[in-house]
Length: 89
Image (cartoon, rainbow, N blue to C red; front, side):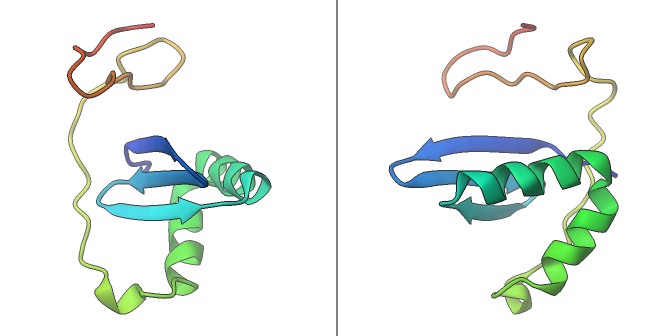
C-alpha cells in the first residue's frame, strides 16, 4: 500500500519521508528513479529498499494511515507548506 510521501529540498539534495521513514538523496537521477519505482509498485520498492538499508536495525513498524480518498483528482494528496493551510491545486 502506498504511504504518504513528503519531499523537502535541502542544501545538497532532498529528504524524502515515506510513511514514518526518512530517506536522504543527493543524486537527482537516483531520487527520480526510486520515486518512479515506488509509484509503480510501492510494496515491492519498500521491501527492496528496506533489504538494502544501511540502518535497517533502527526500523520500527510503520502503520499505514487511514486518510481516505486523495484530495485531488490527479491522485496526489496536497498538504501545503508548514504554517499554510492545505489546499487543492
